[in-house]
Image (spheres, one colour):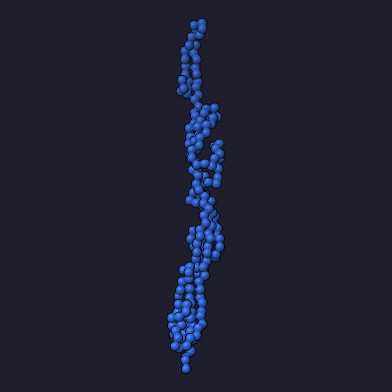
Amino acid sequence: TSEAGYHTQYLQSIHGCDSLVTLNLLVHPTYNDTITAEICDNEVYTQFGFNTSEAGYHTQTLQSIHGCDSLVTLNLLVHPTFNDTIMAEICDNETYTQFGFNTSEAGYHTLNLQSINGCDSLVTLNLLVHPTFNDTIAAEICDNETYTQFGFNTAIPGTHTQYLRSIHGCDSIVTLNLLVHPTH
């Protein structure tokens, strides 16, 4: 029998005497358990006798405290960590505020973040800061001439302003102070 409990059997001895044999049978359980666990890709899972960092199913045959074979299956999920570099460009009158950064300084900036699964991740920002320009040009012409340099086209004396964009798209101001000399 494989059922736990008391089992009685009546037997006859070799001399013909009735005998009673009682079996008190204890049936210990075997186990077939599945553990689902999650780690980051820079960690090792070391619980319940496992020692692995590979995603997937891993099995171990163990013995219970009573010597019964038992099967333990580990379903291991391995989440990625990130080490990303972001290249960005701004003008010198702007601040870079994406992905958790808040800076207007050129160079490398690093943030230690956690992914959605709690894994440490490193994000590096390589920030280029392009200049804006605010230049003033002083020029002189005769009253029968027109000033046509640096995008200006004027013969009127005084201050003239142009709003331009640099090669990198940064707003810049060029001011022309034009002096017109009369011809005699």
